[in-house]
Image (cartoon, rainbow, N blue to C red; front, side, top):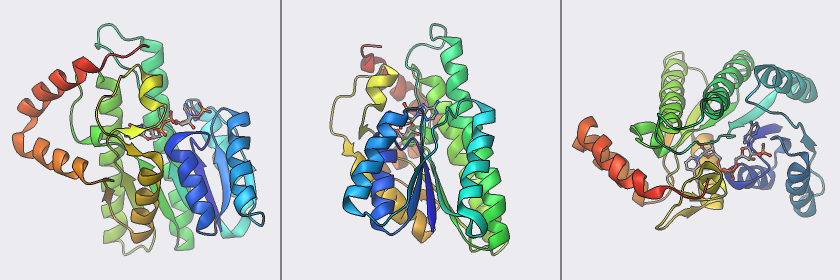
Length: 261
Ligand SMILES: NC(=O)c1ccc[n+]([C@@H]2O[C@H](COP(=O)([O-])OP(=O)(O)OC[C@H]3O[C@@H](n4cnc5c(N)ncnc54)[C@H](OP(=O)(O)O)[C@@H]3O)[C@@H](O)[C@H]2O)c1
């Protein structure tokens, strides 16, 4: 029973891989950094020496590497196929839209949107044929709103949330046993914000909590999983206040978060 986790070299993805290991899955770990993937593998094998843990380094902002990952992971899993896919790798680019670097934002769209789209479609087709499997896409609470000063990131996560909700409903209508979920964390204590040029103040949930709630929610077939107690309330409040007010408030909150880039 294989689980594939992208972005498994750090943060939420690393914790998902460890948690899926405790649940009995053999693992395929992907990210760009083979060294850091190797560290994740060592931790998992230290706890569960009987697991198979395979590393498939890939830059998923490149389309051909998404297709290669799909081919190699599917070939490894053989007839059983991949039982659990976590599309977790993601990046952010902080700054005013007119000032942010276009190349970085195109990489963001390729990673956060295109790779999630490609891997969701290819793995889901196989899962539906086999009549089993779980797909967990990692969105964000940012996926329910607009994010002035972090615009492309918020927009990319809106794509992930809406795509996943739509697929979830299509499969539900078709009576498919395949489960499709979107994990939508709020601020989580990983390197993500620092790498994106965002300074986070205030309480964050741990990557362990985000990963565990995400995997558990996906195994139960929940369409949307918002980990923690605070963020479900904030998302509901933002919906109730409407788009204009929520976007204005987000500007005021986000503009204070300029960190060292
Ligand atoms: N932390 C938060 O506050 C937060 C909140 C909501 C949602 N999220 C989402 O949670 C997911 C995981 O983020 P995190 O917080 O765990 O961040 P993180 O600690 O920075 O981890 C990001 C992971 O993605 C991988 N990655 C980055 N660029 C990649 C590329 N081009 N190709 C393949 N892998 C790549 C990184 O590995 P390499 O560098 O080795 O490639 C790393 O394993 C992301 O989708 C993020 O948007 C995070």
